[in-house]
Image 1 (spheres, one colour):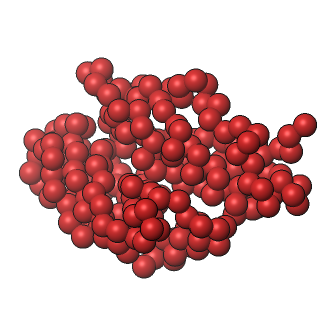
Image 2 (cartoon, rainbow, N blue to C red):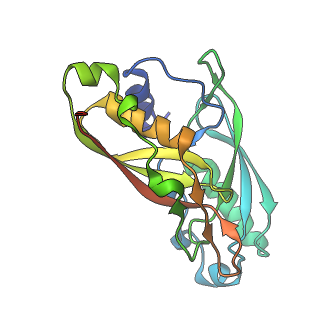
Length: 209
């Protein structure tokens, strides 16, 4: 298990009970694959519509990679799966009892999008009622910034804190809430088709009243 994944797991576990999580959450997804991992001619010829299914184990590592939409370049596809299998790391899915379980994750190229996703409802998903009770009693405040992974259907499939509030429970609440409630008008590619993307999401945790 990598240090990044271990720290991410510790941050969630140390802030209290972890809720049911049906999908594995990617850790530092934008760093897994870039155009620099391929010869320039492969990137130019490969379709950005490439997608792959990653089999995620209960330990958060990738145990298998299956191409679900080929790029049209066999060498590109093989290289992409090899790199993703080595670099992909997740917070594993959790069953209703809180135990880690295997799951699958759909990966799309980070450079496929040409338009940005738009938060539905203005992104006002966190309310005063969501303030962690211990933080409220202790009058703790802060600003959490997270990188949100958005699927082609507008659903949030991953959340990683990039700037901490300084308090694990506030950071955990941010990602938990945006993952459960966040919905976006998805990004689109050059053909106007919806594609997966990432976007920053911030919450200012200020005492109500």
